[in-house]
Length: 140
Image 1 (cartoon, one colour):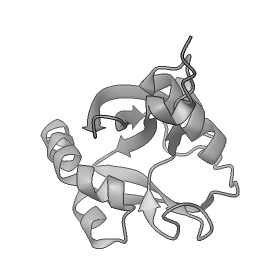
Image 2: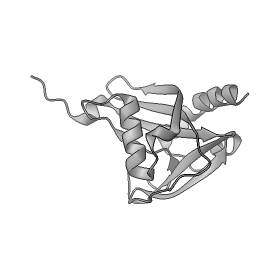
Image 3: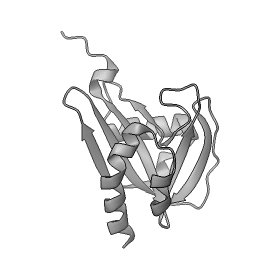
Image 4: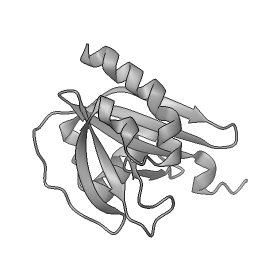
C-alpha cells in the first residue's frame, strides 16, 4: 500500500458570494502567505472530496454552517502534482456568527470589482480573473 499524505491530495477553499459581493478572509500575519486576503480553506483529508474539505475548513476557520450555502460552481487550479479547488457558493443569509480563530483576523464583504485592489493571497490572485468572470456572469 502506498502512503499518501493529505497534501498530495491538494487543497480546497470556499468563496462565498451574496448580492454582488464576495466574502474574503484576512489571514493572520503568522500563517503561510499571511497578512493577505483570501478564502478559508486547507488541505484535503484522504476521505474528503474538495467540497467536503472546503466546507470543513470554512467551518473551522470562520464558523460557517454548510447548511447556509448553495454551491454554484468550482474552479480547479491544477499544478499536476498538486491542485487547489475553489468552491464558489451563495450564502443564503445576511449574517452569520463569525467565529474568529488563530488563522483569521478579519472577514469582509467586497464588491467583485474591489477585490483586485486588495493584497490577495498569491494563489487566490492567480485564480481570481477566471472566478470573477464567472461570478459576473451569474450576477448578470
